[in-house]
Amino acid sequence: MANKIDKILASVFQRRFKSITEEMGLTLLRTTRSPILNEARDFVTGLYDAQGRMLEQTEYIPVLAFAVQPALQYIVRYFGKNIFDGDVIIHNDVFSGGNQNADVAVFKPIFYNGRLVAW
Picture (cartoon, rainbow, N blue to C red):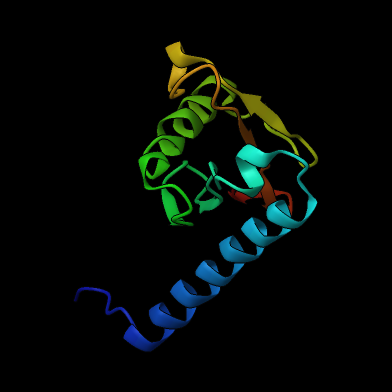
């Protein structure tokens, strides 16, 4: 028998993930001193699963909608099991999934009970 997805619970999680990414964006807008981020809103924030697949992402600049996931998936492959709680990875390599050198991505792994569960 196939697993059934609880549509209400899925909707609750989707809205919660959206709220988290929106709060991340608002925090960045309030704390940045860069007019490129503050005025042009040239950034995205997102949540990704442990394999680097997108769960939710903000829409501040649509062109970046699919630019972050390939870089994160490269990082997951590159570091493998060598990702630890407290790590922060800064990435802007166009030859390993990055969009362009001017686009800098910052990834923070999320651990639960010692296990990588999200980014």
